[in-house]
Length: 480
Image 1 (cartoon, helix red, strand yellow):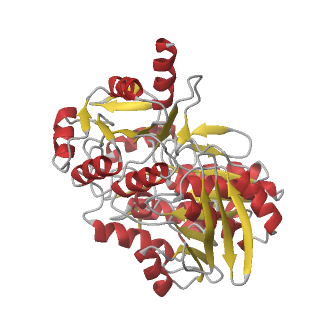
Image 2 (cartoon, one colour):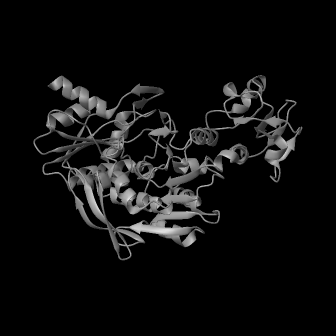
Image 3 (cartoon, helix red, strand yellow):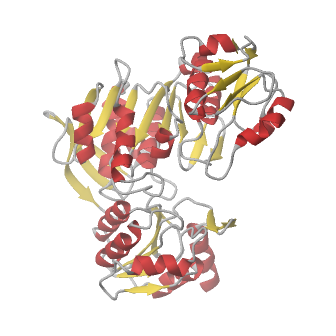
């Protein structure tokens, strides 16, 4: 426990009605505030939690962070940026837990989830304890829960870290999104190891333009504490910019260049084998994952393990122990020996990379089912249509979380980038999957892209249960 005075000492805040009250926690949901907590009132596009300050006070809030003075007799921190203040106060409040765990942060457009799973496996193979916070799950060392946000609000993130420490974990691997960076969800957190995977077009509905997206990713590597290690993909242009900009100790990786390189690459429909080359040394590695894009993820995970002192034998064993990443080029098992995969690829570059990867291991046709999210970056829609029809033999364009838009309107924008006639349109995603399976011939491969591990379809204001892999299983069961 701390007092309000201890939490704000040295910070330049405008504080009204100050009293040095004991603080046991911080919260941003008025209905969940407990006695002795600070309530953070925030304004968003669709909400203003200043309207719920009375409820927070009734539930025991002893101080508030607000955009403007409010008519309540309790300490008030008045600021233009409540999220920033929330982060600064939270990091101070949770410092005893942060001092007892090593945080490993991964940022980039693609590859964060796979890299995080590989790192966790490597650490565990060496007998180390590790939790995980990412787009698929939150693993606190005892329980695993489905993720709500890839990078949660900083209070929720710190609560997870606290549980990890209480459960005896020494490491936490955390996916750091551009939303998380922009919204101060990781501000002030000590990440002694920071990883950059790659960058390509994404989230331009949230960022004003690609330059803002780049700067947000770059910010994760600026103003770092002494002793921080940055593990950077040198094949990516932003990676090269990070190398020139960051104050951290840099370790680079890539295919043809870098401190650690991949060589003698062999891909099959079951695994990926290659050498990790470090100066004059070569370490043979087998990943039980598909796709050459996973070379980068494997390299980043390997270097991370090296950075915490793990020997090569445990590194190689850990990399080889992972065979399934939920929703990442994940095979759907079936009795008909059909090659059907589900993948989260929902950006132009991710779709391109996964289609190139599966083309290399497919003897027959490549069929892809995909769509684009509604109320999100419209500019990527024609790009994805062009990529899908150029790299697959047949594309089936369908719905993928249409939200408030009409599915056919989204599909029309996807079609505007298509220059070939090797595609079909089926707005109903279940029917599209049925059609894709129906059209499969011997040696064909069906890729269902966009949703990956997701358990729902967002339609208007409804969250409709839907999982691509489960739908495949249902379709095959009905057809057998």
